[in-house]
Every structure is written in structure tokens, then in C-alpha cells.
Image 1: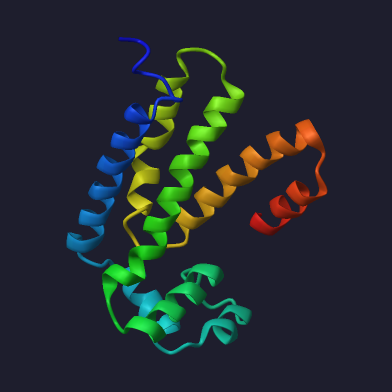
Image 2: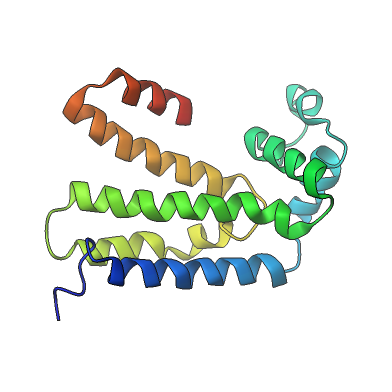
Length: 168
């Protein structure tokens, strides 16, 4: 029975992933947009005025990279709140598998399953994966940098170091 609850067992971690992704997709579809998302959409995504407003420091709602990707999705697919939130859903995929790798690498006990479940079920972080905000993307990249730093500490690869700089 304990062999099933193992982070190397795909039959354990993939069903959890699909349950979470289904939950976030449903939230992204059915949760009403809130004022920050609407403001970001109308101020930056729809107008395409990403850089000018940012240089004036007029709003904290403009998460540059996320706004740029949202603008790209808007130009390709039109106005759709689900597509606007799709960036955060992609961020969950990164976050999930990076947390999986991070826990596998850094915690070598059979209790690492509990730490992994704890990391992916933090409620205030999970909320961001279904909203069109930059926090989901930032949290995913932060955990990716932690994982890559552990890798870099072991091999001192210049490619890993450059990737850390790029993601941070």
C-alpha cells in the first residue's frame, strides 16, 4: 500500500494533477471576473498600451510578461476571459511538476508525499491559478528558480545559471 503513495509512481501523482487541473479549468470558466482582472484587461490588454503605462508607474495591475502574453492571446483569439486566464492555468502545470521535482530532489524520505501535497494545496496560492493575474506565473517561476538553483549547486552548469537569471 505504501508503494502506491510514492512521488515516483505516475499512478499516484498524475490523477492528482488531473483533478487539480480540472478544478482550475472549471474555476477559470465559471468564476466571475473581479475588478483587477477587468482593469488589467481594459487598461492594458485591449488597448495594447503595455509599456507606456508601466513606465509611468500608474498601476500595479500590469504584470508585464503576463500582460504581453494576454495581449498576444487577445490578438489571436479575441476577447475571452477563459483565454485571458489560460496563462495562469499553464502556470499551474509548471508549478505542479516543479514542486514534484523539487520535493523528490530535496527531501529523501517516504514522507515527502505529505510535503508535496502540502505545497500544491496551499489555498491562497491555488486561487491565483484560476485568475488572470501575474501571481501564478511569478510563483511558478520562483519555484522553478529554487529547483534550478539546487541543480546548479550540484553541477555549476552555466546553462542552468543563465536559465535561473532568465526565469527570475
